[in-house]
Length: 423
Length: 215
Image (cartoon, rainbow over all chains, first blue to last red; front, side):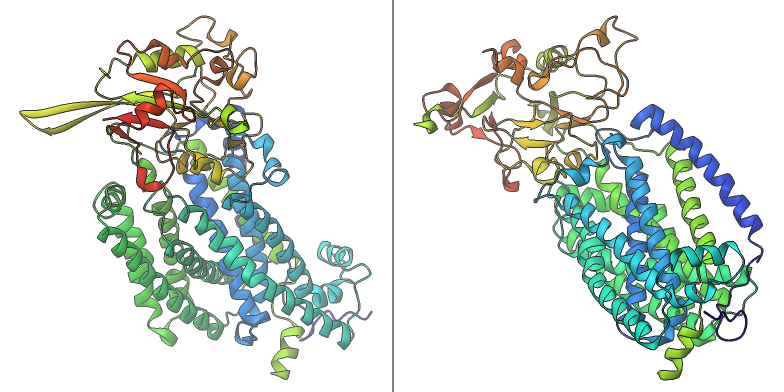
């Protein structure tokens, strides 16, 4: 196998780009997170601010946030591999990688949240056909498997080209492509077919199974009228598209800047346009969800909406979810092709913060209400263990991303140019 | 013939007889030795009307033992399930502590065992646990089941098994609680459940509670 080390045929990453400060920061955060997780393992859920009135807290919030990021990033990748939108080709593999990592982080969050972490495998061993959660757990597993296989096939030609490189990256590539180093046109064609099929299977899996399913998990709960709406699963999928697109933009711009690479503004503006479209749809659905919920005048839902619009959560709703997370990004993104990479970065980052607020406002407000008049109200406030462990897990995800993009050929390569030439 | 043998436990609570003394709550805590934060039974007090035309309703709230239990519906591992005798049980050895059942219960009747105890204020609290569901777990220790799982009222199943009434029913000073077999039309609970005063909580949710209140 001849290996091209330079020129248009080789993956464009330069190893040794300066991520040292990033790694150091992430490792410090992870060490703090590990300490908090240790406290949680030893102390059980007693170290959290959770109670029997508010049994779900920030870990569940971040779990649905990261499931959404994963589903959104994956669906973006299907635009390329299934629907042939080669305009976004450059970011396809990165999208799959981000999707995979986000899903792993999401599962870490929900593992941390289990009262009996030691029994996590029961969730797969035992089942319940009427439990959305039981279905979800299985969908998550299938989905992770599918993401890993699809990512492998997307990277295979580049991995094969990297085999000869005398570096950790080269050895990793050689280990991954043992017995799979055929780069003949027929083999490449087969790879593309596999990816199309996996991507096509992944679409219903990601929409119905993974994130629509996570929305369904909430939507079926009739004890919480605020969640109990058929629009909820749809809203989850659309907000997943919003947050997944935004996350990819943020990570891509951050990494390219750090690696001193030239940013593809056309690509980023295209993603910005997508983000604007998704965000507009998301805001519309949210508006209907709130309007119809409020119009029912059902006591519990009314109390929940009041706490969001004018109560405990008013500051985060109006300031973060609506102001910073929606209005400002819409204004920036609407400028279209006049946007610089910095503007797009800012808009995407704000959107991410906004969707994180959305997740908080989904989980926490209804769980403060007593189920019957006369029962106590919940006054949940996360403890340092919950915050620090969450930061640690997010740092772990970021570290996986930085390392993954350093050691795996996720960037634009000869493959892209081939489809570019053909297309 | 089998149908005639069937026992379907049910409880009737007469709200006009309840004086809100909380004896049921205390007796439940003593009987089930529930840890801090876990109270299978509570009595809610709701004031109604405006001064001076004011009245207060005391409403005991055990688990409703629904015939369509939303908690059992959502449990991912079938740790919570409906028994043939009508009781909604929790298998503490299977529960993974995800607390999905807790957010799904329309009556707030489920409690998470955070592993706390009364060891500080009550010597010997940890030396003995109640054999809930007939399972003897010996001493209560940190991290040992049922700590980390979800708990709830089980109509004192361990007492039913030896022919006794649930602790709250036995102790009620005002005799506001009745307990029996709802499938037996001659039973007190079946006759009271047919009363015009009978009602259940959040009937519109279709959970079919087996705790019936007399208004």
